[in-house]
Image (cartoon, rainbow, N blue to C red; front, side):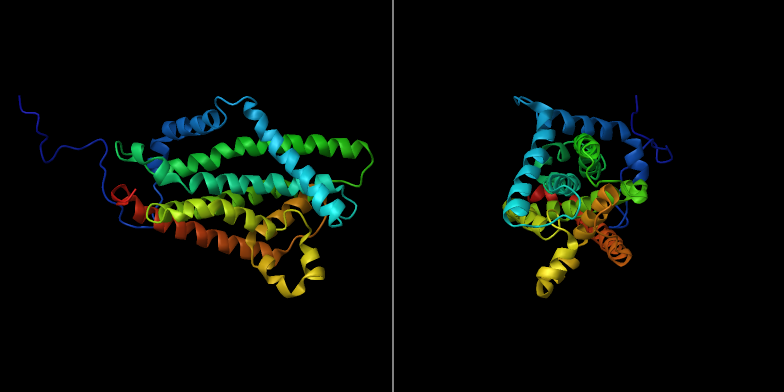
Length: 289
């Protein structure tokens, strides 16, 4: 029996090299949507598997970080947060910031962490970092629930807190944060395949970036206290995302339209730069990992 397919036979699927380094395989991602869901479940279940507190770490980390920032930056350093309670001010910034760091650190090790899977079976490689960005939305939702619990506590204590009507656009701001983390993560994950030093530098870089992203202080404070070095924060798109999120959640600070436009352009540029490097690395990374 001849099992050789005839030249005219139509294949169900055909795997071919990418024609463009900027291509996003939307059709393939949709075709492998079950695998995407499986990876999302894996990311959620395995993070705190065999831990004592399990998902409670989602709550403990922002809670204790907010307490630490409140003591150090507000009580000791004397940073003022206006009429908003300092603890709530810090928790709003930390909650949004944690989503970015989770996306960045999770996707920055894509090729090295999944080399065994990538070397055995084909599927759109972008599914792996995309699943990390999606799964971290659950963590973000849990931390937002904690934030609003404390928000309600301060509200019923007659604290000067209130949502701004622009909070309906908060999902768009979160989308910016996720896309920016995905773009930087794809870029770094591609570099890690050749330069392992980036694995050690990513943790230090994220901590340093946090202090330049207005997480624990108002953006206007830099203009008043350190005008000479203010450009370090004003050229950081994450600072505008954090400041905008706090304005929406607490009605404190301001929204810079120019800053958000800059953030949008920067995010799109970083995403496509990361996609370009990711697609190029995908073809040959298995020889260097």
